[in-house]
Every structure is written in C-alpha cells, then in structure tokens.
Image (tube, rainbow, N blue to C red):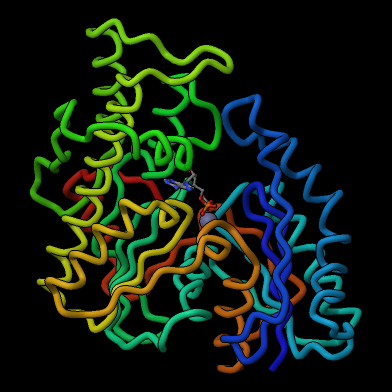
Length: 358
Ligand code: KG4
Ligand code: ZN
C-alpha cells in the first residue's frame, strides 16, 4: 500500500511517500526556520503564506524522489490537528482536492499520533502495551498505548511544553531560535552541576510536568548573578554554557524520571521517545539508562523523523486506511484535536481544578 502523507501543522511544509506503513520511499521537508528566526518564534500569518507557496513543489518533489506516479498511490493521509489553523488548512485543503482528483481515499491524522508513529521506520516493531513520551515545541505528554490506536494520557504539562521551555530560555540568554539545538550544543561545554534547579513537582502529587517555573528560575538566576545575555555574534561565556547545561539537565531529569516511574507502574513492553526534543542526546542517553533499568527497549526516531515530517503522518494514516477509516470532503482542520480515547480524565481534572494545556 502506497500512501502520500502531508504535514503542515506548524512551520514545516512536508510530504512523503510511504510503502506499507513502514518503508519511507521519499520524505521532503521545507523548513521555515529562516523566516521565523528573527522574530524568535513562529509567526502564524507568515507560516500559512509560506505553506501556500511550498505545498505544490514539496508534494511534486516527494513524488519525483519516490519515482512514483500520482496515479499509483492508494491513499492520502494529512495532519488535521492540533496546530496553527492557517497552517493546517493549507495541508487539509490540498489533500482533499488531491484525493478528490485522484479518486483515492483520504484520512485525517492527529499530529501527535504521527510523532508516535515516527519510530516505525528504523526500529523493530513496537510491542504493546507501549508508553510514549512525546516532547515537542507544542506538546509534552506521556501516553499509555495499550494497543495500536488506543491512547491514554498518563502525564501532561500544566503550562509550557519542553521544547517551548528550551526556546524561551534560549531567547532569554540571547541565543537565537530554535533554542533546543543551541542549548544542547552549549550544554556539552558546560557544567550541569553549576546551578541547582530542582525538578518541578505538582502540589497534588500527579505525575505532571511544569516548565514555566523553570524559565522563571533561569530568569531570576540571570538577574541575581548579573549574567549578561549573549549579544549579537559574540561567543557565549562559560557562565552561559554552565547555565545551559544545568537547565537541560533538570528538563531531562524531569522527563525521564517521570517516564521511569510511570513505566514501573504500568509495565509497558516498549518505550517510545519522539518529537522535536527527542533530537536531544542528553534526553536520549537518560532514556536509554531508564530503559535499561526497566529491562525494556526504547525506540527513538532518527533526527530527520524527530522534528515535523510527513512520513510519520503517512505511517499513522496507513493503519487507519487499512482499518477502513475514511475522511469525507468535509474534513476540517481541528486546532485543539486531542489524542486520548481510553480513560479520559478531563472531568476529574476539571473537578479537582487541575489547569493544563491541551
Ligand atoms: O516536533 P517539532 O519539530 O515541532 C512541534 O511539533 O512543536 O519540535 C520543535 C521543538 C522546538 O521547540 C525545538 O527547540 C526543539 O523541538 N528541539 C530540541 C532539539 N532539537 C529541536 N530541543 C532540545 N534539544 C534539541 N537538540
Ligand atoms: Zn511536531
């Protein structure tokens, strides 16, 4: 089964051709980082315009590189949410038009489910129940996946996503965008024990994450020690490198510590760590150590598949197409699309006044 995947939820326009849900025949990603860089974050209006410009050439290139004709594909999978509405609409509209023109089935895919499927290409098959830590610029969740397609959120962020924290701290230190890779590079030359940040814990004992307090702690440290953020092209000081290492270390401890505790409780057979922040080698190393203690495998996507891409969307979509799922031409972008369909705790959380982001 040959499936075309289309992804445009944030600031990457991507298309991929995937065979049988596991073989990446082609994957093209057009990143908008250079456009948004000078604003220190994604500007939604610019993002949607750029998607409009890039969607046609990116899809064409995915077919060319795959050496596959459009008439050969068996279906189209497109990210339907969550994400930026203007960005999502470009992919969704294009996918609908193409499915109609070619007379092939269409499915909408949840972007987060896509990230979970990003590990299928380069790893042994996932064994269920699995546990997935999805860490990106927009999301930080741990899912229990009892069987394919079933998702239960067992940990969530109460405020910022982990990638967002990397980006905000980098901005604060004058380091540029996106912050994750820059902080990781500086952290390699810094001492992680130089600044003591404690892992944020929830007052109600839930295994949730919180990263906004950490950002405040970094900002307080900068103020109190009179640390000067990096200006222009100057080389970062040792103090900045130490701070980057200390910050990265507490984020990694928070993520992997929680994942390990939840894995001890739920006993999954496979761990999955995916999303843009999964590019981070300190996070990979700590996840491998946790998995070794748990005596289960941990799977990561390669860096190309960690950040936003369309191959993961095609992989997740293939499972749905094979199960007979079809989207109509009324498929719409859903900015707040959720990924949980077993033991949804929303009402309980609302009653106990737990504030969290979608
Ligand atoms: O998955 P992704 O491409 O987009 C979203 O769906 O959000 O993730 C982008 C995020 C950014 O916040 C970026 O700073 C972070 O992933 N990131 C990293 C690293 N590479 C990318 N964070 C930490 N370390 C990295 N090496
Ligand atoms: Zn993503």
